[in-house]
Image (cartoon, rainbow, N blue to C red; front, side, top):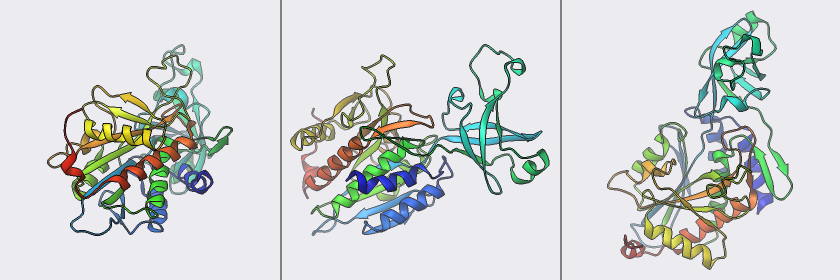
Amino acid sequence: MTEDILPFLKSLLSAPGLTGHEAPVASLIEAKWKTIADRTQRTRLGSVHALSDGDGFQPRPKLLISAHMDAIGMMVAGVADGFLTLSPVGHVDARVLPSQSVIVHGREPLRGIVVPLPPSFRADPKSAVTFDDLRVDVGLPPKRLAQLVRPGDLISFATEPLEMRGGIISGHSLDNRASIAALTLAMEELQLVRHDWDVWFAATVQEELTYAGGGTSAFALKPDLAIIVDVTFGEDGNGKSHETFPLGGGPTLGVGPTVHPFLLKTLKELAKQIEIPFAIEPMPKESFTEADLIQLTGAGIPTAILSIPLRYMHTPVELVSLADIERAAKLLTAFSAMLTRNFMQTVTWDD
C-alpha cells in the first residue's frame, strides 16, 4: 500500500498551495480523486469534494471525512534594492527560515534563498531573528527583480520530499498533505467494500487561518457525522512526552468538547477490533482543527478527530511515518463500512 500512495504524496509535497491560494495542489487532488470516486466537485472557495456512493436504500445518511490541503508559507511584503522583504502566511516561525530554499511565485517562478541581515544591521543582534531581519535573494539585479516580482506575490518552500529509513518521509506541507494521502487511500479501499452510507471526502481550503473550507463544506454537504483528519505533535526530543506522540505508533483520537463521546467510543472499540494501535489525545479546549467550526455547522454535527503524529510542525522539514498514514486510512475505511442504516438511532451522549 505504501508504494501505491508514495508517488501521489510526493507530488503533493512538491506542489505549492498556500492558504487562500490552494489551486495548484487542489488540481492534483481533484485529478487523482476523479479516478477513484463516484463524483467530484470543486466549491466556490476551492475545496475539493469526492463522493463514494453508498448501497441500496434512499435517502442515505452521509459521513464527511475532511482534511485541509492548504499550507503555510510567505508573501512578498516589499521589493527594494534587489531583495524581497516578506510576511508570513499562516503561523511561520521566522527562526527556521534562514538559509531555506524557496520559490517566489512572481511573473514567473524564481528560485531563491532566505537570508538574515548581518548582526550589525539588526536592532538587537543577540535576539532571535524576526521577519524584519530576513530577506529573500533570487540573484537578479534590482531592475529585473522589480519587473518580475510585486508585493503580494507568494513564496513557498522548495524543500524536496525525502524518503528516510524506517518508512519515514520528510518534506514541507506534510501538515496536512499526509492526511490527504490517508483520505485517498481510504477512498480507494472503500471502492472495494460495501457500505450503506454515502461517504463524502473533502480536501478543504484556508484551515491555517480561518477554517473557511471546513465550515463551508460541512454547510453544503450537510453530513450526519464528520471525522476530521489532521496532524498532531510527534515526539521530537523536547522532553514533553505527555504532549507528543511517537511516529509509527498509530494515529491519535482526540478527546474534548469538540469530539462527540459516542463517536470516540466507537472509534476506540473499532481500532482495537481491527488491531490498529492508537493513542488518546487530550483536547481540553479548542482542538485547533477545522472540527471546531464543523461541529457547529447547521444544527450541529457529531464530530471526531483523527490525527497523524508529525515532527517539526510548521517547518520545511516535517516528518511522518507512512505506516501511520496507512493505519489512519484503514480505520477510516472500517468506520465507513460499519455504519448501518440505523446507526444514527444508536448514537447517545453517554460515555
